[in-house]
Amino acid sequence: MSRRYAFNNADLIIIVGTPFDFRMGYGRRLPKSATVVQIDMDYRTVGKNRDIDLGLVGDPGAILAAVAQAASGRIDNGAQRRRPWFEELRAQETTAYEKRLPRQLSDASPIHPLRLAHEINEFLTEDSIYIGDGGDVVTFSGGVVQPKAPGHWMDPGPLGTLGVGVPFAIAAKYARPDKEIVCLFGDGAFSLTGWDFETMVRFNLPFVGVVGNNSSMNQIRYGQMAKYGEARGRVGNTLGDVRYSEFAKMLGGYGEEVRDPADIAPALRRARESGLPSLINVWIDPDAYAPGTMNQTMYK
Image 1 (cartoon, rainbow, N blue to C red):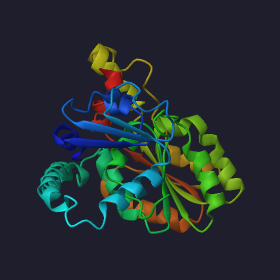
Image 2: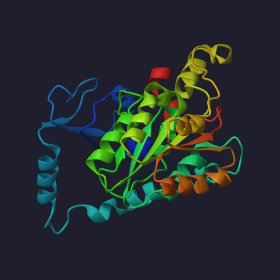
Image 3: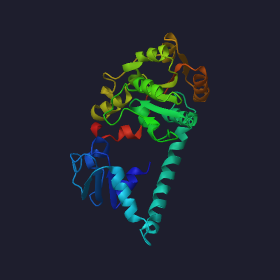
Image 4: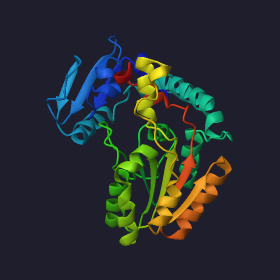
């Protein structure tokens, strides 16, 4: 949560394996005063869309291992001088977290997406693989949900290829049958490939699915309002009030409807205990937008 502050105040920024695409404002989010080093396996990415001070093409793991080796064993490698900077960033992180916490623990109805993300994070175990398939609701979860191990997070990626949730869940459960699969869908994203929920029932692939339902393609809705105003905010992005819990039950899975935030955790536990592919349909606030959605340069 202190990323923007860090970018704005750092004297050196090292970009590893990340292109200067829309997520980075095509490089404009980095201050001109900072020294920028970019490490990537693809030479075509290095220095694209923004000038850099140093580009390194190669395996990031090998490069960073060499940097760590070069910095170790020295009497003074600068660590002590950086301590105040780390403390400054931690203070910013704490301030941002405390500002967000009331919404994350909110008892409001319709449910705030941060509260849904909070309950999912509390629900995860060491053996849970988390899949996010959606726009705004998954952007909310990205700042809250913290899987317990590397390789336990899957999402549509920077191109926003919505609809990956059910296919990812099928593949993940087949690849790691010992793992629990927990998937958060936006209602628009689930609608794209949701019929393969029946495939999971047919092949006995249990998972805990959660639909954050605001009856909207809300990330698109925000962008339209930002560009064209409130009057055009509902053009082509409004969806039906679909009870996806009934969809799950119709196909042989487990389903529940949730409108009260206090009911999220019990519903998740019942889905887990059912041993079936499941959908918990959680009605969330359609007028709440993630900071990541509002900051995207594509909407400005």
